[in-house]
Amino acid sequence: MKLTYVKTGLPSIVNISKIVTIHYYEFDKNFVFSGESHNFWEMVYVDKGKVQIKCDDEEIVLGQGEIVFHRPNEFHSIRALDSAPDYFVASFVCNSPAMQYFEKYHTMLDKTLKSFISSVIKEAERTYIIPKNDPNLKKLVKKSDAPIGGEQLIKTYLEQLLIFLIRSITKKGETNVFPTKESMENHLVKEIKALLENSSDGNLRVSDICESLGYSKSYLSRLFREQTGETIANYSVRVKIDKSKQMIRDGRLNFAQISDKLSFDNPQYFSRVFKRITGMSPTEFKNSLDV
Image (cartoon, rainbow, N blue to C red; front, side, top):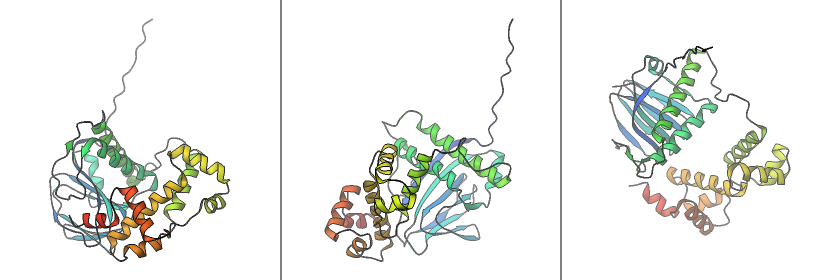
């Protein structure tokens, strides 16, 4: 007996047909972009700091974790507020009717959706040559050794982000992107990272983390290394260097003050660690901001 199968179509709510630019910016506190308009969509996500954005005649302030969309032909400009900002920009062509939800839209991005931003950034860096801090970049150039499927992954990550945002806007679904509950081990690793990243002086000890989470040092140390490929101590140092970069861009403290604030033994040791992690000395990094 011959069976009859019905082929079910898979309609697309949003279809991104082209990527125009992708950037992750690390600017100093004096950064100003005078503005532009173009015939495609642009999405801006603030990872750190605070920025002021002008959309046509409206001015809004975006803080850490907030996202805004600029519709085609909308004039928009951006400038730093108070401190050196880190922010992500993706511009793309999408003519799907569902994009109407994003006109004049900005919001605090749900924490479960931030992974899509990170995935787009990582895949873009693998796929395209992206000059550092170049707001005038007009064309993406593909790397000769780009991994297969990079463009499609960028497209699908962005489309998934848009779909979950639309669900949130229409309140017809939830923004949780995980089909099942995260394992306790993944949760613990995220908690360890959060504790280190939220430590103001970078002096949080592994024993402090163990006491906070209620697990032994040997268990958490082994778990973190298995999940991330590095030790808690190494991750803590990288977090401290990221904070020092933010402080250098902010321009309020000198290197000795930054070293002291982040609990390095002395400025010379801070400089050595900074160069080992970034490939540049603190002075070279500061000078690169003026390029």
